Length: 393
Image (cartoon, rainbow, N blue to C red; front, side, top):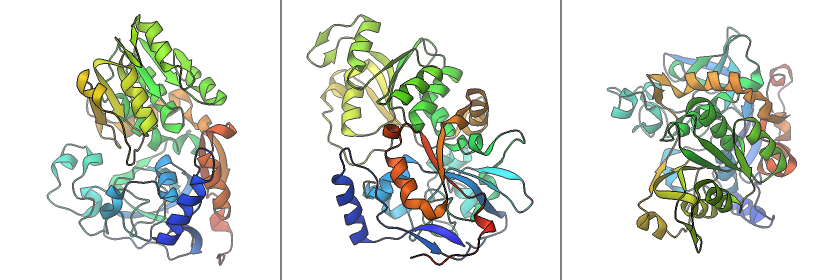
């Protein structure tokens, strides 16, 4: 079958990082990716199903991995070679459509008894992602045994599969996984009546804006968006105030009546949701969060250098929001995400699709999506199975 494969290659990593460093603002390069004919992944055990992707998104974490910018923290919980792609809507053999919940928790790995996190339904915190009858891999798309969405077929455990309503489009369905991440972030702490700032307005940031407005009802929701189309969408999805990067301090100061001493405000946002995850965004988060406020880190960080003095001095809480779990009255993030995608029309964020043999263009488009007026870039696999197998170098 045809698949985009990520191979562990130090020279390719180095070339990718160098190429990105030569582009203003960075930018993904295909690095250790190649298009190849590979065997379909075997079904590891009973309870596993063959999934044939229809659409598969390109995520920010995929781009960080391709660029070689992802933290080495992940090395023990990834196995090579792997097929990327964890934002997937696909078909089962009976023709029914499913959305993939990519975390490879205890149920998928055949681990018994399950770990404490999985027992609570918090599969994002599974403690066994390197164990069981699968090779290491925190998610589908990072595990050599399962395959991934950037291919014609992958293997998934039945616990990972969510049926897609008949009337839901593929474009809406492929947004369910990022929307589930956003729902989980929205329930990290933001409460009705809070002043909330969302930094970043790519796919994740826009989904967080939508999730906060529909499920948490902050008193004022401020979105920080770099590009014109992002600003338009942020307002349409529920942000009360939309500003460009660098204007967030002024906006928060105006909304709270805070005084400013240097770069610090005397008051600030109750919650800041950082959907970027770099040194600059963390510094901006700490500059606008209120004393004893909460910064929720949603964008995947790497190794960053940040002055944490304001966190210490203002007794700010910093926490991460990864993946998903049970969020509200035993409703899971995925159940809420299906609702959010349908109500907010998040399928419109799918801006461009590419066939697999144009993977280089697809990755580079995704890396500069905002600058090109796009949000979500995805692979369209709906016609791949109708084509002959290709030998690709």
